[in-house]
Amino acid sequence: MSVASHDDKNLKWYQGIPKYSWMVLIIAALGWLFDAMDQNLFNMVRAPSVKALLELTGLAGKELDDAAKLVGAQLTATFLVGWAFGGFIFGMIGDKLGRTRTMMLTILIYAVFTGLNGLVQNLPQYFICRFITALGVGGEFAAGAALVAEVWPNRSRPMALGTLQALSAIGNMGAAVVNLLAGADWRVVYFVGAAPALMVLWIRSSVKEPEAWHEAKEKAATTGEIGNIASLFSDPTLRKNTIAGTLIALAGVGGLWGVGFFLPDLIRTVLGPNVAAMDAVAGKKQLGQWVSIAFIFQNVGAFLGMFGYAALSERVGRKPALALFLLLAYGSIQLAFWGVRDLNTAYVLSFVLGFCALAPFSAFAVYFPELYPTRLRATGIGFCYNCARLLAAAAPFALGGLAKAFNSPTDPAYGFRIAAAIVASIYIFGFVGLAFAPETKGKPLPE
Image 1 (cartoon, rainbow, N blue to C red):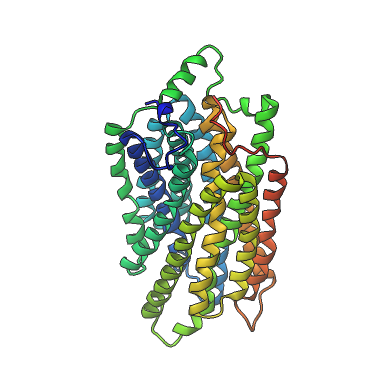
Image 2: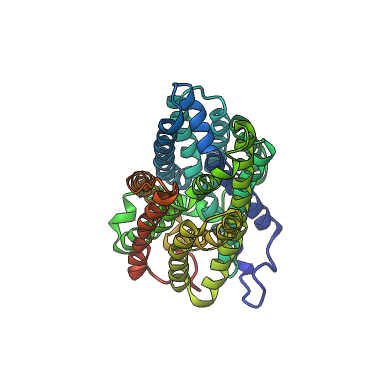
């Protein structure tokens, strides 16, 4: 469906939009929302699930704790690698096969295999399920973002895409709510994550491929350029955009997944002594509740931060807004990892970290579609976002290794704090990318 006739600058971004465009935004946002939920179900239950499986091997005490941290980092890295490969593969499929079909396929993959995570009986099974889950998670975003970008008018596109990304914070909060309601039972948490598979039926009956995609596919029928990843590097402009986008994404993904999403583990470490007098089951449940509530605070902040970037980028430009939030993201990680000392500081600083460290992800939705023509849009978005995930897969290992190296017998969290301060330097890559990235504010999507 074409929306060019609705490109009236006198209207507010949400006015004069066809019902079909709203439906596409709702469906794409729900797909990404549930994608984010299924990602973060793992963050909610990473520590208890890994410990439960390691206990089956006979480990206990400090040996169990050290092994759990290492395996948790390995699982996170495996997820990031699978996420990256899913983005590469399904980004190209999104241009070749279509946005709608790709979105259905990726949702089905991530939902079904999230549910299967709840059935694993050993660590090899866990690693396999996390990797396949990640393939679907990595592929869904590029298809959904390209779809929304192509059915919304230019004047409304940034805020529509900002809304798409901001609603991922609701999915993140959903993961915390699921964890709370499941009583921190990690298997039940994963079973709930299979529910989004039902969305595929709605998408199949309601969403058509955009006209822009059909036109691009017809034009590319003789050249074979549609969805061709090599085309991202054969053209000098696209090559520069791709390198810049990858560096920007590396900063955001590495900072969040390499450090920010380990805040629940830090909170467990800091607050662990507070439940030492309880029996094991009650203490585990209480810690799970505190972590879940802190994660909700973090994602309330994320929701506001992602909207904040979209709105600010419309006023001052994509690049200045992103530079500000990258700087705030770095500062918020330092503040949170050094400042969490009790339950109150955990809640407050979780909100601050969420607002600052998640805001750059809004740029991936608003900015990246503006860097590529229709025939390569999903491919380019998928490459930037997911190449960054592949490069950032080393960050959790770095965090875990540094935390162990700087471990202090008097402060169990000291190693975490030092490691976070060092690994957060990955935000430097974002500023390097911004140095030669183009400004796209006020420009139509490339055709």
